[in-house]
Length: 484
Image 1 (cartoon, rainbow, N blue to C red):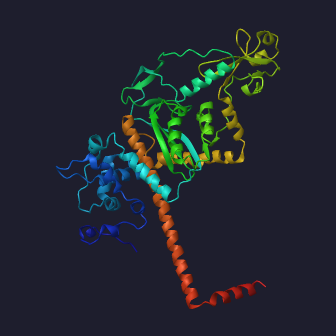
Image 2: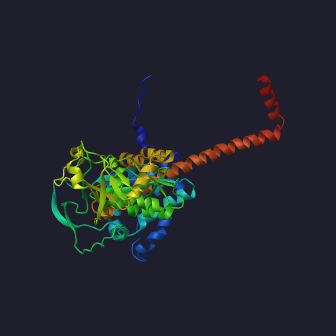
Image 3: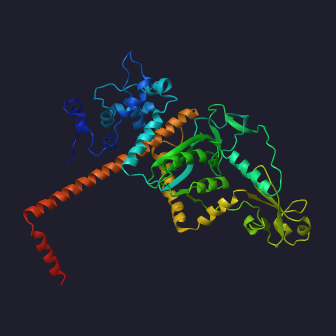
């Protein structure tokens, strides 16, 4: 039977409350039960004046941003439009059906005047993480660290070349001491300290000066920011660092690792990282803190047709290398970069049949370098074959890679409309806070459902035993007899 629906219903007046219009299992209901946002009042109390016109509730401002990042809405303008027609959004904010929603520019103005350069967004991230830890959802025994790029709002063709200062390495002082000790052990003088300021030429965007040109294998060159992230085995984001796109993963590792270790160090057992972090300094940092490094195999970067470095055997007792033709490469010096140099005898190399596979140097001398912390990297390579370490590395694709996939697909993490490093930190903080909040709310909801079902079953069992205590034994007797 053909049914036609009229338009008269549009003018019909009905009495409903927002509570009735929002589904019982809506995500915002779960979030509302999981966290109380009233802690924001204490954090922003000093940012507001004691007199003047009444402000928009700061909790409402934060909740509007939470809606935007939870559901991956691309802009604040679109978020306000959605809130105007979405009953669940209005219910979450505490706005009635007829109440006017704040203008889309309100949050931006409050950010510039109040929230900028404050810890409000970081406090929200920490609060959510604390709740997850309190509920026992975190699994920080295995930590996974990696980075992903976020395309900046900048034209890659509009740039200029500038010279910038090369920042000293985080471990420079420690490495210098190790170099001096190694040179002294070999009877050489310490290297002279140089005050020379090193510079390098970089590509700087004329649109967003704080973004950096991102290069990575087959990926498109673009101006971007990097979100260096650490997550646990349950996919909760433990901490992060935001840098420009031209900062290498290994440079940002130390600050991120120190923050994660300072909070979860007593629980951590292993750290999984990819090949971009595989260097002697990072291996030493992890092993010195009593944590197992889970690193992948990294292919030797040697020219085709030449011997690989592992084919030159290191003799630890005599501190020398032995080449594939059983000739000795003796220690020469330790350079400023922390590499010990081992050189062959020119006379041996000139008459060697394998010289074409060994070196192309004009003086017919082979040079092999070994970092002063190379033994830490060798230990990490040795641990790579352990079953537990293998399993931890295998979990990377199910944890940190999944975090990045969800962030890009569901939360608009592929690119940003914001400019400047400070605003990018705010965006990354809110995105990761919302991802943790979403996971926390869903887990708490499932736990409540389980408890409801369990309590119902438990109540029925009590009633059963109370009114018919012999029934359970008669049922067991029938079951036993049926098996004979």
